[in-house]
Length: 202
Image 1 (cartoon, rainbow, N blue to C red):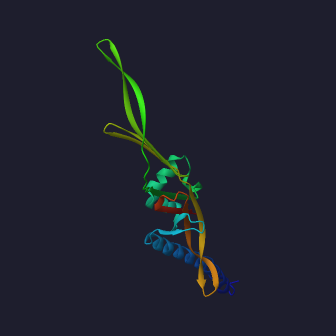
Image 2 (image 1 turned 90 degrees about the horizontal axis):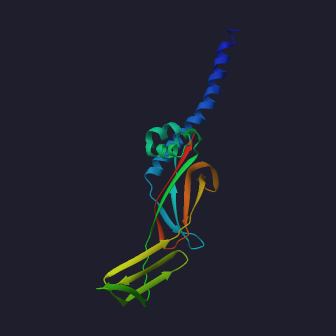
Image 3 (image 1 turned 90 degrees about the vertical axis):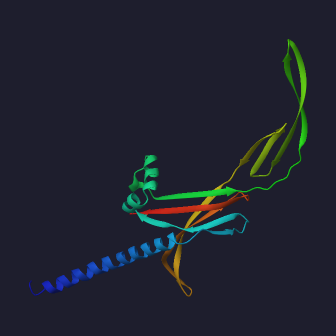
C-alpha cells in the first residue's frame, strides 16, 4: 500500500489539475471579457430592415460581485422581491427621440360668455390648432393669444437579442469570446444613447 501511495497521490493531483485548470482559465477569460466590456462603447448601425440598432458587450458578474460592485442593481432586483441567487440577467436601455417637423395651422372659433354688470356678452375667440403624426409620434396643440399648448406622444418598441461571440482562428470558431446584446428600436426618430446588459453567473 505504501508503495502505491505516491502513485495514488500523483493521480489525485493530476485529476485535481484537470479539474481546476480549465475552471481557472474560464474565470480569467470572464474577467478579461469584463475589462474589455467596460472599455468599449455602444456601436450604432442599421438592420437589414432599416431599423436603428445598437450593440454592446455584456458584463458577466458573479452573485457575490453583484452585491459589492453592482449595489444599485442588487437593490433594484431586491425591490422586485426577487432573490439575487434567482436572478439571471439585468438589462438597461435609454433612447432619445429627436423630431423636426412642420405642420400647417388652422383657425377655429370658440364662443365663451362674459358677465358684465348683470349682462352676458357672448365673445368669439380664435384659436389656432395644429396636428402632426406618423406611425410613431403624434404632436397636437393650440395657440391662443400669446401662449402655446402642445402634447407630444412618442411610441417605441425596444427589442433585445443576447448572443455569444465565438473565438476565431482563420475559419475555425470555438468557445465564447464575449456575450453581446443587440438592441433594436422600431421608432426611426429614436436613437439608443445608453445600454447595459449584466449577466449574473453562479
